[in-house]
Length: 316
Ligand SMILES: [Zn+2]
Image (cartoon, rainbow, N blue to C red; front, top):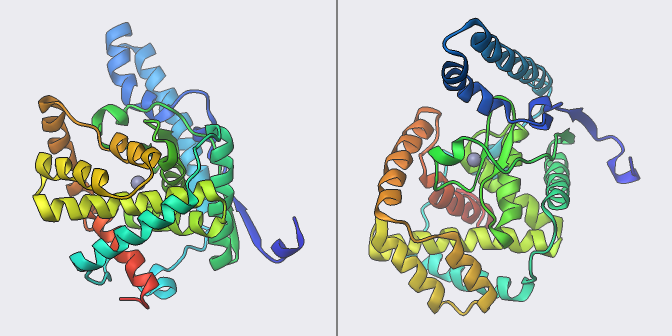
């Protein structure tokens, strides 16, 4: 412990499931199908499922007990905004922000060459330090990441996932400069911030506060990409029209070519089948979010950008 950290309390969440070699949430989901396929609805099949459930529930219970000691950031008190207190943001203000962050990104840009395990460690430390700076408590969690979870197939539009019960985190796609923000978002969930707006905001604020160019650029990229998506939708409408317009806006922006390429790659062109699947799953996901006290998928972009606007302009 170095001097500046003296007096900071530490709490360690074991995340045993996240550190296990196989994705236990996947086995939980797959075991009923697999056991029926391989073993019939037999006793060994049930035993496999029970074993997976036992390991999963056991580890999750340990994490849960440890989390009871976590002091969480009170968003409204600390930032003057939260998921239900967000100021409006005009189209003009959004366009102005696009110009500002285009400049900032061109200035800070460097290629992403940090291997994922090292990046995960650096992101986790930035997030832990940022949260401790507010709560006085270091919430130490695992920095292990998977590259596969079943949820990837259910939510093809997602870049990463976190199983809230076990804290298992997976990154689904290589997103280059965006990856530190994706990791920080999922790690925020792992530290107990389950709401999407909170994960988006903490990831952004922690990466910017880190002063590490690769992390700062990722936060700026996420913010610019969300603003571009919103402006594209407001100018051209939802669905394919909005997505095409997003690509137009990226082309028209005065971003460095490497940055343009990364922004284009983040929003892939979907086939008709993929688009249909995405629409259905997004609707389900949106409803699930509303059932848990959130505003729905708009928290990822509308909510996120309005929150930061509030923080920087003296609150809602
Ligand atoms: Zn999330």
